[in-house]
Image 1 (cartoon, protein in one colour):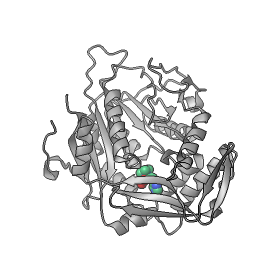
Image 2 (spheres, protein in one colour):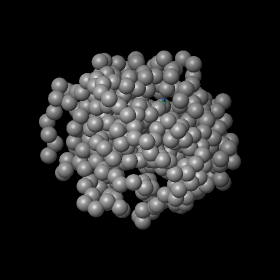
Image 3 (cartoon, helix red, strand yellow):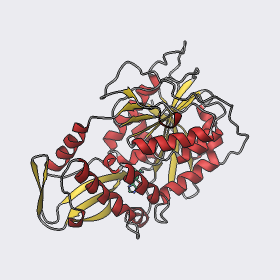
Length: 378
Ligand code: AVJ
């Protein structure tokens, strides 16, 4: 049963407080154990780059082609949003994060600066922090700094070099065991086992990454998180699945502001989308010509999301591994959805996945919200 809450009950305001990290040795090149239910291709332990053991669990190349063809063969052409994040795409996204129009990162960082101590306290000691889609791990830096004794930090990302760079940066700045996983977090993947004992797991899912999933997919993802929290820990007797999920989501607001955030004046967001065409042309040995498309992002009330599309300017065809894909003049490719929620809508989504809101942190304008969720059965 979902418990009732109101903004006033759950909003947590700035909390200062002491912070500190315990000194801990970071083993270099240590082997990370792999749990038994390996549901994806791989996994293999890669070369320990930058002194960190890397758990590799990326989907086979074949699945990129499958996903692309599946997306472009249907009558409404669409590509999965995760295709944006190759090395260049990850860098472009970093640029987006500091654009004037893109309020999301700035606002969430502000919330995190104010509330890191309170979030850290909510997670408790000896917590294994897992971050799906970690990217540059910017906000995580603040969180780990505020945690008294984090058991391990497990960044999971699809962009290998970007992941390794960010993981190494965290390892250099904090005395915490960093165990990166190279994986597509939307698929189940094994988790590394930290060398020390852990009290609980927490999944940190900031940045409105949840916004890239449809309402239905987001619900399934949250269910998957609940399973990860409940999975028994190999070397902990009396394991309690009482971890939490901390999610950052973007709140519904003025349509003009939302649209401006995805149609920036400098065209960085457009480039972020064109880059997907360049990337696919390269990796799938095809010719998706960016010059033949125009970018635009629109708010769609019925979807509850900003929908980003590339529109074909003229009729043309491309050959992708022997399959001919034809674009009509004015036909769109749906590139990405960025869903926005009211807190009440998000609470309903979480409840359907078996999670209840424990805490909610937001900024003064309520542009962005961060929630701590816990399994409702605990
Ligand atoms: C990383 C999914 C939060 O949807 O706001 C930014 C990605 N796309 N500008 C978002 C994105 C275009 C971003 N998320």
